[in-house]
Length: 270
Ligand code: SLL
Image (cartoon, rainbow, N blue to C red; front, side):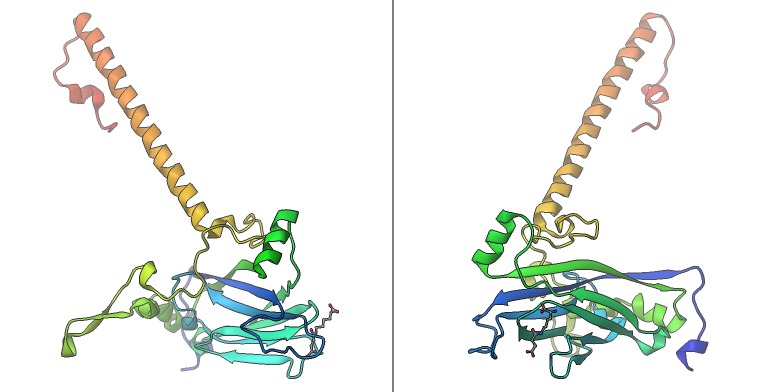
């Protein structure tokens, strides 16, 4: 049955987050040809990537077309699933890479367009620029979101299936036919786009996320610490409230009010 005519799941949206970005190095650099082509001063890679340990993108993403500047031979590069959806090149100048995302046929969705402006030169504060120069790496990436409105039933099934996480199952347990894959924790998974220890300079800039803060372990720890603090102050407030109630109960006893059970006062507050 063609996807266009298959039934849609009403009042339902499917959303997926992913990353679009580039990294760049001043040449010579070990991952690029040496000597570089004439006049080429930078090696770079533009990419469409899943979030660290996110579900397999290829459930919905089947092809990515990267259209480079016309000065490149074969400027249009099509990368098919399973990817990685990236193009590695050398060059001298920055330009806007036109990106087209092609979806799973059962989704019945048309290709979607995005643009990523290549960032090859250090940027940000003086301190950030100095670090990018020192480490010879510039990263410019942002969080992107794709939304599928009222997906086809077939697509909905694929997008909610547990198999999407199969790529995280690298350990086999048991013997013979009983051998099966088991989920592994992040530390055991070959990192693809590892959550950085610190906010990546400039990542998230201009998209309201704030200097990549949403995507670092430092930020993760801050959130956990804040949650811990909130829990602690809630505990304190509860303790305080309990003491107040006890005091009120005693006061009422003194006043001769009969109280049969503490429960009556404490009720269901806790
Ligand atoms: C700039 N307006 O000058 C831009 C143009 C051109 C990018 C960027 C070399 C390609 C090749 C290359 O880097 N082109 O030689 O194959 O900043």
